[in-house]
Each structure stands twice: as structure tokens, then as C-alpha cells.
Image 1 (spheres, rainbow, N blue to C red):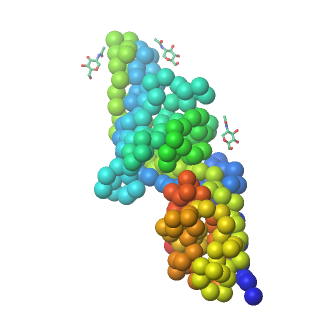
Image 2 (tube, protein in one colour; image 1 turned 90 degrees about the vertical axis):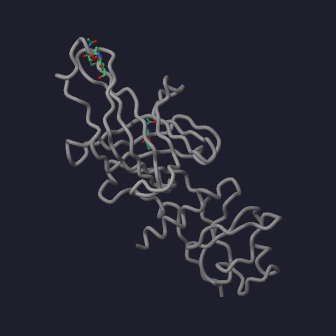
Image 3 (cartoon, rainbow, N blue to C red; image 1 turned 180 degrees about the horizontal axis):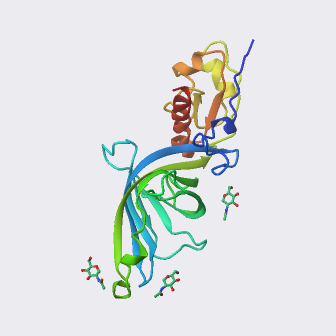
Length: 253
Ligand SMILES: *[C@@H]1O[C@H](CO)[C@@H](O)[C@H](O)[C@H]1NC(C)=O
Ligand SMILES: *[C@@H]1O[C@H](CO)[C@@H](O)[C@H](O)[C@H]1NC(C)=O
Ligand SMILES: *[C@@H]1O[C@H](CO)[C@@H](O)[C@H](O)[C@H]1NC(C)=O
């Protein structure tokens, strides 16, 4: 009478094709979102060589950098308690995640800066609070100038090199996928008894729907199906949850 399609959290983890060896993630991680970043890599000359000092970039959802940027990429002036400096600030709520580079992979072209695996070291409350990993991928330009341009007289000088990159953000799955028996009709009387956790419920393919005042959503169209699994998402995790829908759309393409 009830049929369920169980989609596990790990099935939603998304690492760029061909990069699974270097960019493997724990099973419970899912892609939160990917952004297109454009800015500068800032190098400081110490009189002998240029070393990375910081980076500044704006991150967009659109790959042509149209619309307004959602995130600013910057470096903390001094490392956090776990040594992290590269940071991302979400404009809408001011949340910041900071990380440390734990793996570097050469880009396909030596004209482009390396691809990076970054582990979170700290964060502040908001959308980016629960980001665990950030990958810098598909880089363009941004390579340090040659040492020959860092003479002793230039010690202390900073040069800013334009670059572009994709930043992929990962969070732990918002909740273990919960399979809820779906009643044969979507009436409140049938669905409410199984949807006992306050929060937003949505089907595998649908974005979270608005919750009712009691925190339980039982009247939306996706709930009328008699098959499928429903994810249970706490109110605090709704944003992360909404991206599962995007991930599925992405996979479907
Ligand atoms: C500049 O940094 C490099 C790499 O850390 C180091 O080998 C070199 O001695 C430094 N040069 C000066 C003048 O401090
Ligand atoms: C970074 O995260 C990966 C994946 O969880 C882990 O294997 C690695 O030990 C972490 N590195 C550091 C320095 O925390
Ligand atoms: C540092 O860079 C600025 C701007 O390019 C330049 O005017 C200045 O002369 C440089 N300083 C040194 C010591 O080369």
C-alpha cells in the first residue's frame, strides 16, 4: 500500500566529475551551493619571492557575474584559533565561515592558480555557519609574478592579480533522510499524525514549502503523492534543505 523511494544523504554528495580521489568528502556532506568568484590574489614581495598575502573576491550565483554578489571572499588579518585565514561572508545575514587549505591540486593549466580543498576552522551564526568544506575549483589566472620582479628594493610591496574561480560549499546533510509513510490522501487528518517533527517537509524533488503556524506543513501539492520519501528539515536548516532540490535538478540535467 505504501511505496517509498529512499534517497540517502550520501547519494546527494556532489563532487566535480573526475575529482573524487582528491576531493572526496565525508558521506554525510551535501553540496550547499556553488558560486562564481571574481577578484584578486594579493601577493607580497619580501625582497626575494612573492608569497600569497590575501585574496579579495565577490562570489555570484551567476557564472557571468550578473546580479548582485552573495558572498565576499577575504582573508582574516590574523589566523583564527585553528590557523584559518581564508574567509567568506554571506551578505544577507553577515555570517562568516573561515577555513584552512588542507590540499592543493595543480590546475590543468599552469597559467591558473591551484585548486584547493579547504576545511572549515570557524564560523559565525547564519547561512554559512554550518559550511564544513569549501573547494576552489576551475580557476583562471591569479598566478604570482616571477621572483625576478621581487627585488630587495620592492620588499613589502603588494601586487594584486586578477583571477576567477568557482567556490563549492558543502554542509552536512540537514537531517538524516526520513521516510514517512504517505497517506493515500493529503488531508491534514491523514498526514499530520506522521509528521510529528516541527519543521518543513518536502518531497525529494521539491523545495521546502511554507510551514503552518504549528510548524507542520501538510497541505502542499508534493504531499499528495502516495509514493516517495520526505525529508524532515528543522526550521534552522531550511536554507540548506532548499539546495537539495537544486542538487537534484542539477543531477537531472
Ligand atoms: C622570502 O621568503 C622566502 C620563502 O619563505 C625565503 O626563502 C627568503 O629568505 C625570504 N627573503 C627575505 C629577504 O626575507
Ligand atoms: C580535512 O577534512 C578531511 C575530510 O574530512 C579530513 O580527512 C582531513 O583530515 C581534514 N584535515 C584537517 C587538517 O583537518
Ligand atoms: C611599490 O609599488 C608601488 C606601486 O607599483 C611603486 O610606486 C613603488 O615604487 C614600489 N615600491 C618599491 C620599493 O618598489
